Length: 219
Image: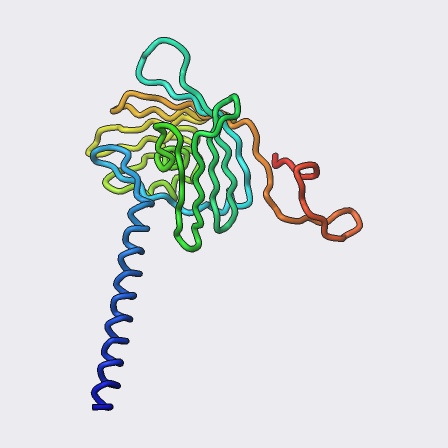
């Protein structure tokens, strides 16, 4: 009877370990799906990690959204992105300073959390920001059922089944992303870019912490 109890306990322990493994596996699948953004009926984009060229960088930009050829002022909001080797933090707010959404992505462990206060999809904002700012090779790697064509240093297109979906043009600090199929355009005007390095050496060779007062602005 004692042997049976020990065997039963081991069986229960094995079943518990299997259940935990299945739960972890299920979470990983769901977590991966969170990073997949639908750009069109035929195109899906997998959010790409922070490229080395943008690591330890902060960017503040103005987003101007316009649907088709409608008259009137374009809808606009501010966005601030902070990127380290393992984390990407996005904050969007109105030009008056009211928060619209925040997005916090820990790329090393795969967790992505966001909240939104109005009908703006944070994942789509991040995806389209990557289409503009990320290197072409990274964007191409993230596209599913879509093709990226680099026509010049300042112009790239994303198509599906030979139909152009996105046109992306860049000039100095201003980028324009046009969704031809959905008939909308987004102008992204980069206002500021700075370093997020945690520490630097002063003139005496000692380490000093970076603050908002002494933070260096990247060229």
